Image (cartoon, rainbow, N blue to C red; front, side):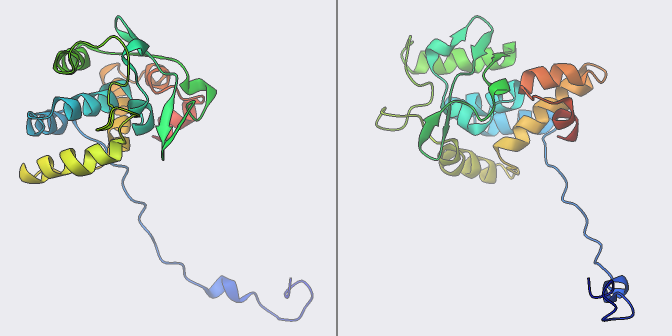
Amino acid sequence: RALIEERIKINPWRAVQLPKIKAPATKHYIPEEADRILLALKDHVNAQLAFQLACYCGLIPGEISGLKWEDGEGDVFQIKRSFVRGVLDVPKTAARIAPVVVPPQVRMYLEAWWEKCGRPTEGWIFPNRMNTQPMYMNNLAVLVVKPALKAAKLKWYGWYACRRSCATWIIENTKGNAALAQAQLRHKSMATTLNV
């Protein structure tokens, strides 16, 4: 505006050199890392299952917390709710309210956890200690996952890294079929899937 109004002769911002900032790498796990993490969590079937649900089903932490036993049927979980910051609500977009495929490697951990919980037919899959509401996945990460991985000298990139891994693995294993990854992660737009 000062230049247009001829209050100054040159725009001083043209001389400003912006520092080159390297964008942070989007973290995800390679399959071998995921296998090592599962091994490090061998004494915690619930943490193994949560990790698998994030990595192979593409669920976000709130969706994992919001799962109930009655949401599963066969090889599919119907995502109906999310538990975020103490609030139980529907997932953040309408596209996220959808079924997700539960692959065999996840089913194995799901069945092991179901057995350990006494074969329930209803209720939270991951209840809090008082069994009154869902467990926060960040609590599971802090109390169980991070200490186990630290002891095994493995890195924890977080639950969303697992979701990114899911998209990456689907695309890599289907020779670039991003539509399958989009469906599993329940993204409204293909651009979101490809940017992840």
